[in-house]
Every structure is written in structure tokens, then in C-alpha cells.
Length: 423
Ligand code: SAH
Image 1 (tube, rainbow, N blue to C red):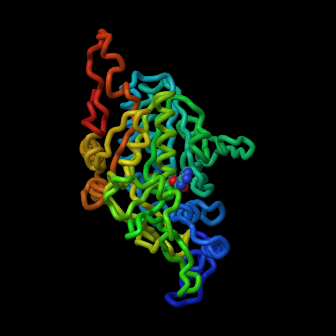
Image 2: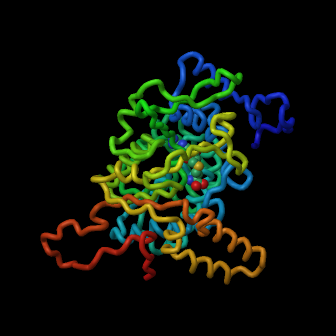
């Protein structure tokens, strides 16, 4: 981790005040809180560990990339962001080329995905020249927003703590305005494309366990046997969350629910219903079938979720069946489809061939083939990552089939979920 340059003293060494040691400032804060007011939900623990304003993982570390704690697809190859940029342009065309759109990214990390998409928009300038494009980034981490600003604008940004919507503004290297917000509710209304890549898995989950006495919520408490160590306990009785989130027909014995993801999906769906646009969600996840997926990553290795909070990324699989349920009615949904299927439909093979033909050294060739394998191989990211979309109903079904309109032309298929039609 950058910042804490203390040499590691090896196993059993004195606890360090920050970074690699077990005893972190955030752990001390949590111990005080637990001693004073008793156990907290896993959601509250996860929220503190990731986004505590002073000590959260994303707030002060956010180690995405090869030198960090975990690697994401946009950090592996530019092709990923380019194909996603093409997805939005293709939807923009399918929806009749509206005069303006906002591209809203939730949790943009190092800004790599946006940067790659902006390059596509720039290359398609003749197509987009009459369209008023703006970028809106929703990011809670001051540290990552700084990295994004540097990447996208070269660091030329104005901070504005007075403005209670956008806390920072700038212009991309290609001349497109960019604004930063802490909350999706602060993004101005208007025709928008939303993107969330590895965002929903970072939102806090509640965990529930079936017992002989019925459902109990999993809580985090102090371990009475080991000083300064946390442990999981079960709530002594049903909690309010148990009543709300466990369906009577549930068959699993262990369930994770992310209410915050549900709230954000509802917001996206009503914005799309009111102002038009689409949302693309990409993440690892399941369709309401998995049980215990809560885990931590530090330095590209699995890390115990209760050890040294604030120093590791904590994550849980996204339940796409829950997202679909939260959107339904307001918008149509597509997917989830596997990443390798989505990227194949978007033309990743053609793109790879072009890049291979244009590069002449073996090192680049190797690198291109390696990154393709990372994204597409079912054993790597190809199968566990999924794409899921929210679209206005009229994008999939003609609004009034009653008044047989002159245009009986079928609606163009949605790229990625079926093959991209090159024109
Ligand atoms: N999309 C990027 C980064 C994924 S990491 C990529 O694929 O590489 C998760 C991102 O979400 C980080 O930028 C993190 O700071 C941000 N984040 C986490 N919780 C958030 C919240 N509640 N609101 C807004 N952003 C959040």
C-alpha cells in the first residue's frame, strides 16, 4: 500500500498502527462502538470497512490494479472499455439518436473505463458531432476521484464544496464536460446512459441464517476469547431486516441481501422511465441461488473479512434476481448473460484480430492474447462475470401495436445480448 512504508516485521511482530498489521484505526473505532452499543449488522460493518470517511478501504486505499489488491477488466485491456463504449453508441442509435445524453458511471475506480469509452466517442466524432455529451461520475472516495481527475482531465479540475450537488468539475482531454457527485440523486435529470462495473458488489449486504428456531441475522461482535478480535454471531431473535428481506418461499439456508443495491436500481429505473436512456450493470453474481459469498481481497489474495478492517476490499456476489425484481414494472430488463457471451456478441474477436494485425512485436502479441484469455476464459472472468441491462419498455416492444403504424419494422436487437449488427 502506498503511504505506509513500514517494513513488515514478519509474523508475530509488534502490531503496526496502520496498513498491513491487524490493529487498524478502524478496528479500534469499531471495538469502541461494539463495546458501547453491542453487535452490528454485517451491512453496517461492511459500510464502515469500505467507506468510513476517514478510514474506509475505498476512502484511503482503493487499491485497484496490478499493484493494488484486485484487478478489474478495464484495467486488464482497453478493449473492454471500447466495447462498452460501442454498446452505448449502438443503443443511442437504436433509440433514434437523441440530441443529448449524459453518461453516468457509478464507482469509476481509476477512471480507466470512462477514458476508454471517451476515446471511442472521439473516434466516432462524425457520428456524435451533433450530440451534446456530458460525463457524470458518482464516486465517494476522495482519493479515487483525484486519480480519475488526473486520468481524464490531466488534473485540470475545479473543486466546489459549496455546490451541494457536483463536488468537482472539469473537461476531458477530448473536450467533454465531467462532473463528480457523491450520490446518484445529485446527478441532474435528463436522458442518460448509466454504467456500473464492479460497483454493486461493493455495497453493504445483510446476511441471514436459517436455524431451528427460524431465520436469524448474522451480526458482527467482539470475540470474548481473543483480545481485539471480531467474530460473527447470530441475532438472538428475528431482526426487522429478517422480517423484510426473507421471502416465505425461500429454500436456501443462508441468504445475502443488499438493500442499497435495490434502492439504487429503483432510482435508475425510475430515471430511465421518466427521462429515457439505459443502464448497463456488469459484475460477478448469481440469480438468487448462491449462499455465502462475502469475502475480502488484499494484495490479490483472499483475506479474512473480519481481520484488519479498512485494509482489504470486501465484496459479495450481486444477486441479479433481486435487481430484476427491484426494476420490474418501471423498465424492461435483459440478462444476466455471461461476460464471454456479451463480449463475443460485441465483436471482441474481430477487435482482437485487428489489434494483432496492427502490432508487430511478440511481447504485444502475447499481452493481447493473455488479456483476451483473462476476460473470456470460463475459468477466469468469462463465466463468473455477468452483464445485465435496464431499458425502457418501448426499446423492446413497440408502444402501440393497436394502431398499426406505418413502421412495422422490427426493433433493432440490443447489442451484447444478441449479436451486434455492423452497418
Ligand atoms: N468500476 C471500476 C472500480 C470498481 S471498485 C473498475 O471496474 O475498475 C468500486 C468503485 O465504487 C470504487 O470507485 C469505489 O470508490 C466506489 N464506491 C464504493 N462504494 C460506493 C458508494 N456507496 N457510492 C459511490 N461509489 C462507491
